Image (cartoon, rainbow, N blue to C red; front, side, top):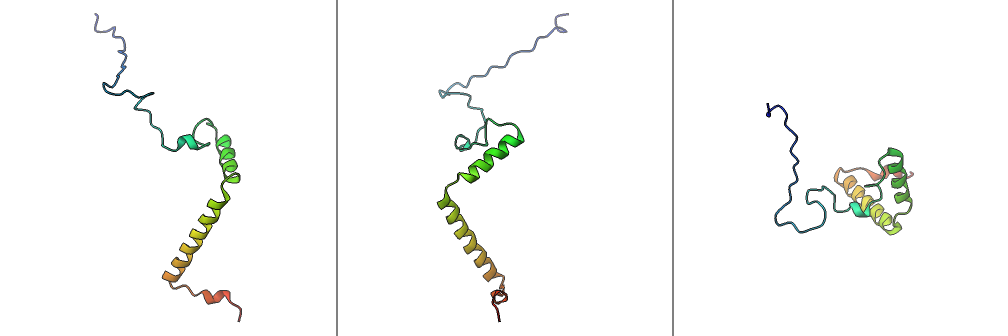
Amino acid sequence: MGFLRRTNKKFDYQPRYYKGEGSPYKIEHKLDQFRRTAGKNRNLKGKFTDAVDDLKNSDKSVNKTLLIIISILVLIFLYIIDFDLSIFKRN
């Protein structure tokens, strides 16, 4: 009755031509090493506090540039839909 007592076979595949470090099958984003919210904290509160800290300590020039780009795109959108900007003027 040897076919009833089977042990689980271990699967330990090693790629033939891979000479890098770590597992080639590990799924990781390219920018995870630069993010504080991507790795260590598993709870929701820790991720949220890290995101708030990143927002507080962000680069101010990037925020200014982003606001300028968003405002230009909003104005272009308002021009395309033919929005009347005269409602903001006093008579």
